Structure formats: structure tokens, C-alpha cells
Amino acid sequence: MADFDGLNESLTARKSQHLYRTRRVLSSAQKPEQEVNGRQVLSFCSNDYLGLANDPEVKSAFISATEEFGVGSGASHLVNGHSELHHQLEVALAEFTGRDRAVLFSTGYMANLGAIAALVGKGDTILQDRWNHASLIDAGLSCGARFKRYQHNDMSSLEQRLCGAKGGRTLIVTDGVFSMDGDLAPLDQVANLADQYNACLMVDDAHGLGVLGTAGAGCAEHFQLNQQQLPVLMGTLGKAFGTFGAFIAGSESMVETMIQQARTYIYTTALPPAVAAATLVSIERIKQDQWRRDQLLRLTERFREGASRIGFTLMPSHTPIQPILVGSERLALDLSQALEDRGLLITAIRPPTVPKGTARLRVTFSAAHSELQLERLLNGLSDVYQALSDRDRDSLARAADCFSDHL
Image (cartoon, rainbow, N blue to C red):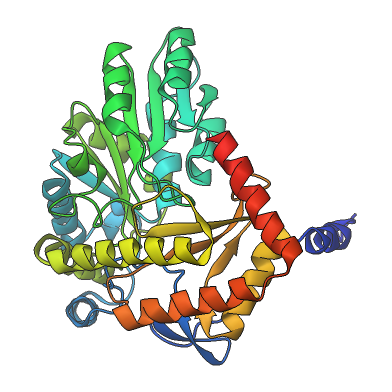
């Protein structure tokens, strides 16, 4: 058993089921035109929604801070790793999101695990949307609270779960923008139910911050939810902010509880200070550069029109996440490879990341994409669609019908 008997057989089975995952090697900066596995491609699979990961001002801030603070923080925040730059970023994030305070975490996964475990436990109840991110699901399963899931964006299902909650605290947890579908949670309705049933609401706004709202402050701004209505706000910095890390924002007492009790905050090394310096510049770019969100909206609308005209079924999203529903895992891989052969990089998303029968191509846009690059994408999609066999077109149609019935 020292060699873990059965691992090779399990890996072979994954390959036969078209579920095996492989890594590509990126040899250039994060931008639309990339060098991947030794060849030039046009990428439509990054979460760098505002094009800030390679922004000159953001990079300059990172480089300057490295000269002053070095490349590593050296310790956890509660030892001596909490730098002046970390403090400045927490203050800026609190102001940006309209909350009393914010606390930095090293990753979004760690933020969700730490926050949920610090807020609920044995005797409490946690209710989660069925399509929540894996980190939220894992946090709910491991925190010790009674864990229930409600149907995706279904307020009747949520209310039924709330009626069944008994004793202790009740925490409702949902993504703001769902990462594999691109649709929004109806947070105004969720917040109303939370208030009605004396529950607390936590939102993972990893894919909404920077993208939604007049100032880019995300789902809370989009739905006009204040700190009382949305007490626990989680955001990540590695997507629209273009840097790395995550944070939890909320009241003074809630954030202080994170610092005192969230194990994934207490027992890990702080982010490099230079990351905080770069993110401070990103926040200013997000607030000031409305053109980035305008560009995303234009690209999204033109893509939806063009892809639908070709014949693909799109999911009901008006965010930069634009999944093309395929259904079959095998066909999703084949389409992804056919596009890559044409110099277009789009990832095939398959179970268990998404439910069986809903494999898809996850197209994502960046404000750094141009109109000409969008045309290249649509032309490539048209080419691969025209090359499909009758069998594969029937498979696409069946997947679309099944998804419509599910909705």
C-alpha cells in the first residue's frame, strides 16, 4: 500500500471519461496575446477582467515596493508580517466596499474556510446555494454546523430551508456572480429573506468586484446593499484587481472576530507587501477607469449576439463570464482543442466543476481585449461549428433542451 495501489487505475478511468485535466505552461505576461506551451495564442479564459494584471502603473507600484519592503512578508500578520502597506490596503478596501473594516487573507479559498468556521459551528445552521464555489461548499461541510443546500437562485427553496432552521445562528452563503455560469444571485431577495428570518448573509463577490456597480464596488453596490443587509462580504484580488489575495469586509466586531478566530488567517504567512502596494493602485484604477467596464459590456453584448447567430447556446449571463453550453465532456474537449488549433485558448469546463451533462466552454473577457480580437474569436467559433458532424450538432441541441428544462 506504500505506493497507493489503485491510483494509476483511477487516473486511467478519468482519461477514459474525458475528465482528465492537464496544465499548460504560460511563458508571457497575463494579457490577451500569450505564449502558451511554446506557441502564440489569443486567450479568452483569464479572470483578469479589467486588464490590470499587466498594467504599467500596477507593475510599477509592485516593483517600487519590492525595493523598499523586499519580496516576502516573513511571517504571519499576528507575528511581525503585517506591514504598513497591508494596513493601508485594508483601510482602502473597507472604504471601497463601504464597510467598517477589512482583513486580508492569502487566498480566496482560505478566506472562505476561515470566515465560515469563525462565524458558525456546532448547533448552528449554514444554508448554501447549490452552485456555490467549491471553497464555500468545503467550508460548510467542515465547520461543524448543520449544512443544507438550496436550489440555485430559488428563493422558495431557500425560504423552505430557513423555515427548517432550528436554534443557534443561521448563515446564508452565496456567490454574488457564479463563476462557471456568470449569472448573478438575486441578492436583494436573499437579503430580504435573511432579514425576515433573522439570518446572517455572506456573499463571495470574487467575480463581481471591479466589474459591477458604477464605481466597480461589486454586487453590494449593484444591489445597493449596506453593511447591515450584507454583513459578511468576501472579495478576491486575483481577478479584476489583477494582483493576488483576498479579504473579508464588514463590521468592526466581525472583522476582529476573523483576526482572533479564523485559523486560515492566524496560521499562515502574510501576503508580500508589494502585492498590497500594487493592489492599492488597482483600486484607484477600478474607481477611475469607467472605460474598462464599458469595454467589457460592449464585448459581452457583441459576443452574445454573434455566438447565438452562429448557433451556440449561451447561458443566461451578462457578466464577462460567457459559458457556451456543450453538454458532452468529450465534445467540450474536442471543441476546445479545435479552437486552440486555430490559436484561440478557451478552457473546457467539465464535472465535477459543473454538473454532469452541462460541460461547457467558459469564455471570459478582459477590458484589454479589442474589437478585432473579438472578431477573431467569433470567426473561430463559426469555423468549428461549421465543421461539427450532425451527431455533434444533435448533442449540442439536446444539451440546450435539457438545460432549458432544468431552468
